[in-house]
Length: 511
Image (cartoon, rainbow, N blue to C red; front, top):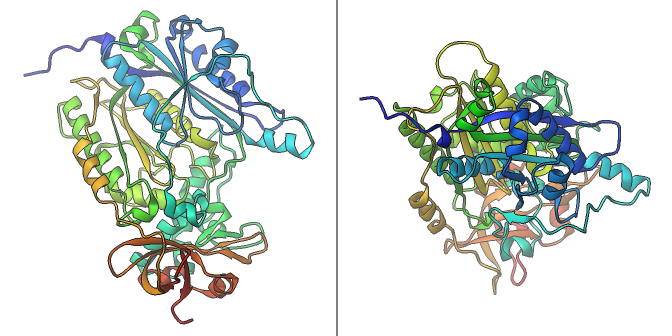
């Protein structure tokens, strides 16, 4: 028996998108967002006056309190449009699309514009030339703040300043390398092979910051132009935030699209799901897995199967964009979703954060814009499906979205991860702040970062005590850091360090 007809007022679609890039003039994020929004709205002009919500992804390169209101004013949109800005997290763009779809499905919204931008290139030039920072307008009412604002780290991480993503994601990588049986050099070669296809996609993307195809060897081989930043990552394996880029998408009901005469542009939002990994990395039972992405993936495809009236799984996806701030994020997501790293469909539609560009929290808006454009213009008959994933903090906050070229027969559904989330939260490992006496501990994850000339500068580890508690540890002194210079980092995983009494510090076991 076929499902009942759907109410077009409650079918959410992505109807338009726009992207912007600036390599020459000095700009600010509002300038760029306005450009991207104008590009999107130009394709659906009769929807411009019907926008009831403008959602801005958190902006890192400005301190103004009201970027969403500034964009609304720059666009000349209805003053009644609700204005809001998200909390920090690269999951935010997909979360905003998911929430907009849910609001449309429940009948409480009609047309939402989602936009984001970063202008780090311009900010860096201003600073270098003594030009005052663009502070944004301070005479406007504060935009609403939306999203998950829970802390990204706990006392254990804070005690050793384990806060920067470039120092955390390599910890995950050490676990993956050890499981693969790779030493550091072999794992770098494997990562070069993983990321090289991303550069080919970036080379063909009109809004990519580095439209240049590189070989696996170019990416994996350390050199003065491609130094090791944090073991095992070279510079060309890491997200590049120093761009001036913006993107926007317009999400509306199918009814609004029909009334505006643009229903033939509709890309349907089939399903969405979100889940959060154990928030503090020292408490994760296995830094080489993402139970949250696995849970969100199961919920997403279960919802899509309900929405589509048939079983939908990862093999049904035609195009996808896997969040790629660092190679470990790609591998953790692929492992959680059952994807091969060399999947012939490709793992990105933009080229990824190291090559397309990693504009702060807003990369996934570009991915969703590109993905939906491909679904909108793709050839062939039948339903084409696209998958977008977004990651916030340290594979902490995760959002997945499924998009289709045809309507889902049973409408949009948002996956339920309530039970899985409770299980993830309950799996957190207790951490020990310090010890009264020295004690050996097993290394769970390790890395080492280097300064600009390649000198070892830090070497945090996560280690497990005999009682099962975890500790985030820094080297006891510079001699330990220096001794790590020639150490094979993946080889430390599963080995032993000696935790010192007092502050959370360690020495190598052979000391």
